[in-house]
View 1 (tube, rainbow, N blue to C red):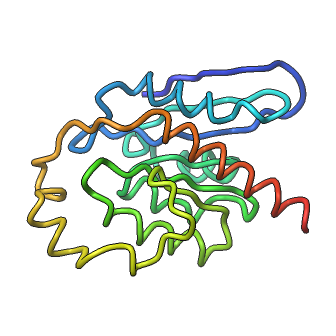
View 2: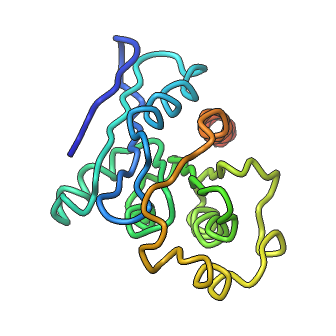
Length: 178
């Protein structure tokens, strides 16, 4: 399933991919999350395209084609977000963290940093590191994060928009410095 939200009309569009999920840990209101992502792109000059995509519904080559041209990848912990490996080197990542599951942010922020990507979380921490979080695996297991007990996720949409704004600002600073 793919839905497109666009703003602006000139030049190469900033491509944003919002990773949607079909199984557990789905957004309660995907359209509202996409609107928040688009709102976070408010400082971007020119066209912005937000593509809402369930990556598991695409073949491998289609995922590579989509992600290799993506400027900003937004999503929750899972294989879709792990596909940041295929992003361009000047891309940015926003890790959406469900309330009460702060531990989910660390692996994906670490991975994005190792890849040299600009990264932000919806936790809006200045510098998320492992020291911000408790014992990840045990804690998430107890909370039922991986067992499907968490089916619907509500996110703070203002935090989503702010995380997008911060990630894009960091991306712009990196591009200006290179």
